[in-house]
Length: 106
Image 1 (cartoon, one colour):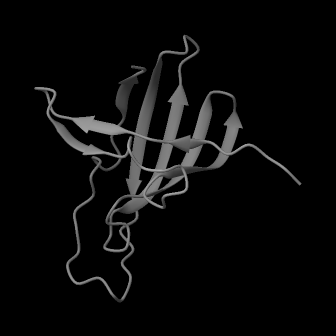
Image 2 (tube, one colour; image 1 turned 90 degrees about the vertical axis):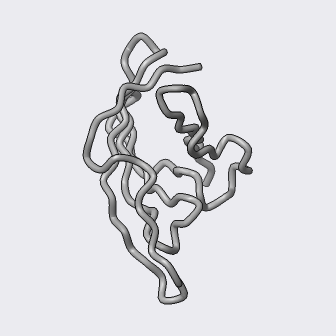
């Protein structure tokens, strides 16, 4: 059985354009990328998220709502925060928890 896989890469910047976090240079099979979990239709996608420090709590769920114009979307993150027993120092989540963010296609 074959199916398509949707992978979401991202780059976070501050108001001055300084890159705070990026997964753009990672390979598509890297566990730090968001992998498509389920979708409701062609505009709403849900992902499991595991950041670069996913073993130490940078993990959760992402919802992405694509606007019909195809260039904008809304991003929402719910922090899960699970930690593996081998984690030495828990980390804070990269994304703001439970707040919508307007995203623009670059």
